[in-house]
Length: 295
Image (cartoon, rainbow, N blue to C red):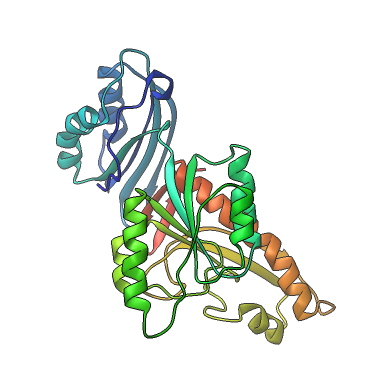
């Protein structure tokens, strides 16, 4: 279990989410439901899935608590023996506790703009304390939304030093999750390991096709009839992390490379926003190279 913050929200925040995966066995839903019932909970939503090949059980349960506030640590301590019995990977969180994200960008503005706009109208359960970039170009955009913008110029020689400075800034702001909104840099393995399954990237192709740089050019040269965008968790293997969300749009022989880029921008914005919503609402369970997404 990986819990980034431990707090007790007020009564208005007393909805609880459990995300859990474990080897499948009979009676799992019954045992977990009884745990909720014993603590005065009322189940509002329950989604489950069993992988028929690997025989792994996945569940997301949302429940309300009508009585006095229960500290998160108390819920965790109470559930831990059950989770150990199930050999489970799990997380319990309150819906009222927003995910604190940092957005990493380079010079492309469309994904950053989409996230800032959607967050400004209350669509995401996130706080955005800062934006990090290797260029100054998008500082005015962040300023429009009142978000501090930090520039860390990168080169081959200073990458390790810069990443240490970035980590210090992230930890100083209690950042839970990093969103790479067309951040045109490769993160070091050490950085990725520190934020395992907490770095969300948008890749401008329908993975696993056209990994790496210039995917629209690769697609154009191959004469594809659809292009796509993929949001995934970042791993040490470039563009190979567990996929969260994808979408496609049709193209034809009439479309130029610029047309593909233009159409692709709309996909990138939508897909990254969708993936961020899934993550912030605790709807994703990672299963090796795959994900289970309860939408």
